[in-house]
Image (cartoon, rainbow, N blue to C red; front, side, top):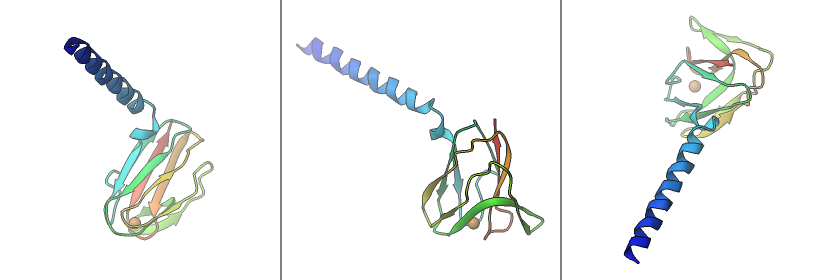
Length: 123
Ligand SMILES: [Cu+2]
């Protein structure tokens, strides 16, 4: 009886491991970008066509993300064909931007914070 329990335990641990690995390789979960109160913690990300990006605001500050870019402290609104709609990110909020259904390079920026840029390469 004790042996059977150990075997059952090992089997269930093994299946949890398989499920965990499967989730990690299924794409979207890895497309995550964090922000602090003034900037994206990374300035670029590469994703696959059809995928989205999860933006996690680690600060209590509002961010307004849109298609465009900051150049030398001056903001430039862009209308790149295929760029997804922008979004408002409240303090400590997590939101998904996308999906990006067109291949190419897209520029996202925060309209509030100078030089808060994110370049998205869609392959
Ligand atoms: Cu911002």
